[in-house]
Image 1: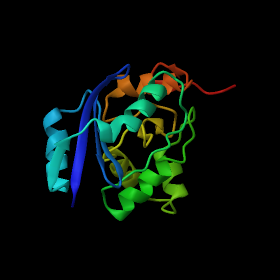
Image 2: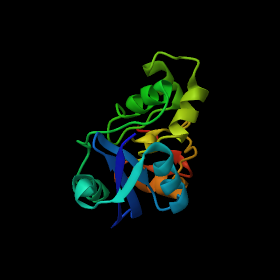
Image 3: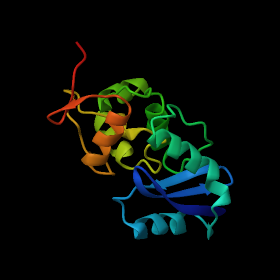
Length: 175
């Protein structure tokens, strides 16, 4: 492939690294992920890796606004690197509105693979651009918080930022 440009920055959601190609944002590293895995991913997928803050200013701006509760929808070009099925799932995740949640089964139905909820879970786990592709909005079918690459504490923080109430590890039902 081509070049990738990365930037390290601090937000109120913690230290993050962002990577973009000329085609768009391709990777976001949350604080809980090892820095080495972020760089390994870039080296596997791109010929040249460069630090470049200018290339990622708009991404940082939007992530900062989101982290302050001032942005509900990202307006960024994405460069998705994955299998066709993963890309289908990731695009499905992008349809979950701010402040709402869905289950793996919901996404499986949305993408036309009603029995593929386990495969949806695996694709969700491989999401290279968390927050922007809102995999944190996926919950268990019964409302339980389920695994998140950024950790369950981060998942709770993101959901609560979006106005979703959590009670004893479950999304509180609306009455």
